[in-house]
Each structure stands twice: as C-alpha cells, then as structure tokens.
Image (cartoon, rainbow, N blue to C red; front, side):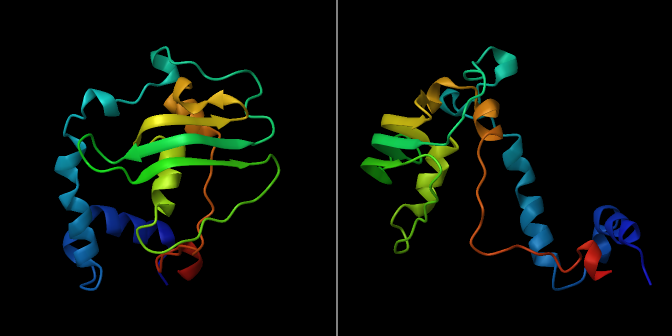
Length: 160
C-alpha cells in the first residue's frame, strides 16, 4: 500500500509517469506557466496592504451587509459590460443564492466582489466600506465562497 506522501512526491517530481487519463489535465496546467510571467496592465495591478493600501477599519467587516450600487463591470476595457447598472442589498446575517441562465452574470458578480474584474461604474460596499478603497489582500482575507458542487480529488489522502 502506497502512502500519500509517496504519491504526492511522484505526482510532482515524475511528470513522465502521469496516468494517461490525467495527462491532458497536467498538460493544460503546464500551458498556463508562460501566462504567469506576462505583465498585467496597470489597471490590474494588485494594491496590497504591504504596499501602502488601507487594510479597512479595525474589526471590519463586522456584520456582513453587502450593497451593490449601480455597478457596471466588464472583463477588459473595450469589451461590452457583463454587469449593467446592478443594484441590490444583502442584509447582514442573511444567506443569498445566485441563480440564472448560462451567461447571466452569476460568476461575474462574484468576480467583482473579489475584485478579480474591474468595476467600470458604481460602488460595492461591505459593511458600509467601499471595497475599492481597501487593499486587495485585506479584502480577500475577509471573503469566502462556498461552491455548490464539492470538489474532491481521486488522489486525496483518504483514498490511499
């Protein structure tokens, strides 16, 4: 019986011995390596607390109220907006589900909350604080997404 550390060692140090079913996934990941070295436009540069960006008020967020005020967002400058003049409030302590057809903006909504895409107009407030004024790392430490479908790897330690 193989131990999990041995399996992890083999999967990270012996790519030539990847199971044929998993080889395409490994190759797709390796194709992303050159992209990680591509410089981002200035508008996509992360502003971190260590670089002088504010961390948000002490104890923030305290209740979890989310407000979108006339938010319009697009994936890149020059592309049509994926969210247009979106306004809603999720009261503190409430859960919210986002449902809709393919292409209706569900993922884009979450991407704007985490500042993974630019907001062209409008404001996103978390407990009354404009998320655009908080350091990117400080903001993302305060947020979490619970996926609808659980993710499990066949190589997880419980499967050894």
